[in-house]
Length: 423
Image 1 (tube, rainbow, N blue to C red):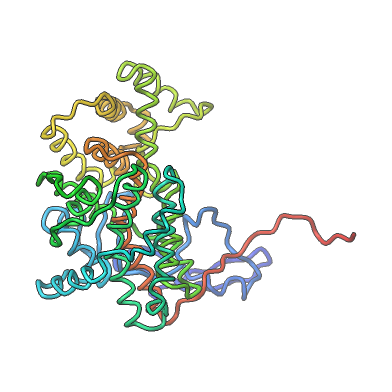
Image 2: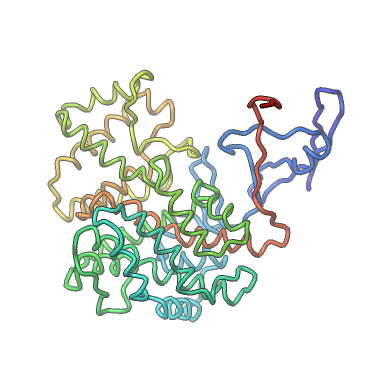
């Protein structure tokens, strides 16, 4: 505590609130005693000004466009590291030594194949089931197949549960794709593939040739999605975990939260928006749709632009845009939707209406374009987001679980219903 703030209540009573300053000079008022001392609670729709816990995982400054994992900038990590090392960093706090990384990957390899009985869960689902339902169901199913790792109070069990979740998320996501496309799921013959290469071979077959630049951009996307502070899905993982629910249950709930179109589902909505524009005339219809986006009475929304937290250019978007342009050029992709996307981006960045409101393209805009260029179907975009974010959810669940002062999440309400009535 570095200072205090004084709050004067309507009845004239004065309350002293402890004031904290984080390592990046963020300010926070401690209101934990507010209701006890005054009978008041705070009103904060969407929890936009609520800090439920201290965290040392990710620093995000939306005004300055800064994103760091454990102190390392997202730019440095994408340029000089890889997703395997970033997973370790996000969960354990430090970049691994060669020996630590080798041990970490060996532990993931132990659990790299899903139990056949669990995979049969997909047989009970319709073929057109959205992959996010499958991924969430499979993660929840791990609780049944690994009950020996479900005690959140046992650190050794928690560590094994982490390896199970990280080791099996690749085949879980890839087998969901195979289910949707009526393909036989097979594990790749090479056991030492990167996350991205392993995913593509599980989805498209062991003979699929993974281009080095494609592998790099998928690795970048996974790094960019690894964590993002207390967003909706991460907060869900923490809230569920605060009841001492096991890690598999908490991750399953986080997947469901991520699925929403205002969160991870946005990258799928980007492509659906581009398809709508293409159907109305393509690049010639750009101005029309930009006008619709400016019209407050029009329900049309420009998906993939702006961000709840970033009031500057999304640093993740800056990184992925460069690689995105490079990969699309290299692959020689000729897709009218990509042409619409590039024209829409250029037009919006030159339009004062959007730039004045800080509505820049975000990571969802570019990730959808990349996946489209790689012939990955739109329904798989959000599962790939979950693939990258899993380590972040785990890190937050673990951090909270190791915090002796953590409490079960229990927000208060402002009741506005009828007062006491009689029958």
